[in-house]
Length: 343
Image 1 (cartoon, rainbow, N blue to C red):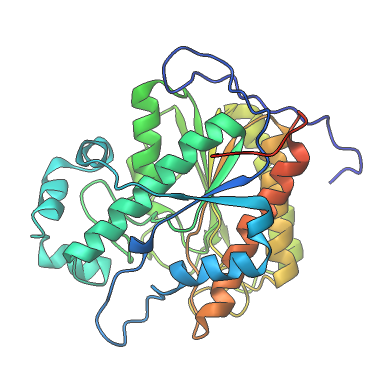
Image 2 (image 1 turned 135 degrees about the vertical axis):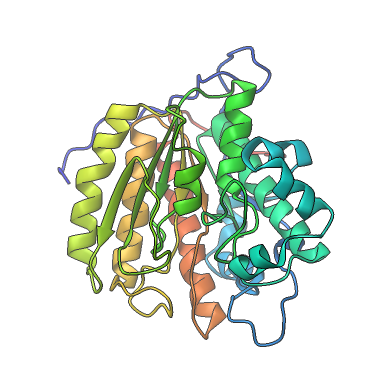
C-alpha cells in the first residue's frame, strides 16, 4: 500500500431508513456499536464440533480488549418472518417456522432445527440487519454472530440455517435504504449460498476469496471468486486482497459493505487449510476497514467461521476483528465527538 493515504471521507448521505434522504448526524458518537444477544448460543447434540460457545466467549474477549471504553453493546432483535421470506424461498421459511424442516436439509445444515436453533438464527440475522442500519447512520458496526453464507434460498447448509447477510441486504434494498451493496467474504469457505442468492441481482456484488480445496466441493459463482491454494501465507493472501478490493470498490461504488470476517483462514484453524498468522489476520481486517471507510463506504462486520478445540482462542481472534474495526472507525470519523449517550 502507498504510504500516503487519501483524505478520509465518510459518505453517510445514503437515503435514510425513513426514506427522506437526510444526512445522518454523527456528531456526539464516540462508542462503536456491537450487536449481540444471549440467544446467539443454542444447545446442540453432545459432542457436536460446531463451536457454539464462541458467540458468548467473544463478548468476554472483547471486554478483555477494553471494549467498555470504546464500544456499546446493542441487543439484536429477532428478524421478522417477512424479512426471512425476502431472501429465502417461502416453502423453506414455512418449514422453519413450523419446526418441520425436511430431514435431508437438516443433514445438510449439520444439526436439527429446534426452537432454540431457530431463535438463534433469527436473532443472528436481526443482529446483522441492526448492525447494517446503524452502520448507515454512523459509518460502521459489528455483529458478534452472522456470516452464515452457506444458507441458500431454499435450504440451509454447512451449519447455516438463515443467510443473515442475504436477509439484511434484501431488506435494505426493498426499503430503498441503499441502491448498491458489496459483500466481501473472506471466510476460508466460499460464500456459495450468498452467491446463489444474488446471482441475478446487479445491485449486490459478491466477492469471495477462499481456499479452493475446501467446502463446498461444488462451488457457486460469485461476481468475483478468488480460490487460493492450500497453505497460502500472509504475503500472498494480502497481495491478492490489496489488488482486488480497491478495484471492486471503485467499479461497483457500493453504499454499504458486508464483511464476512471469518478467522478460519488462520494456520491453526481446524477446518481452514490456509496459513495466515495472527499478524496476517490483523493486516487483513485493518485493510478492509480502511479501504471501506476511507472510500466513504459504511461497513458491517459479521463473524463467519472459526474452528478449534480452544474456544477462547477462536473467540479472541473474532474479538480482535471487531476491535480493529472500532479503532479504524474512530480514527476515520470526520467530526469531533462529545460523550455519546444511548448510541
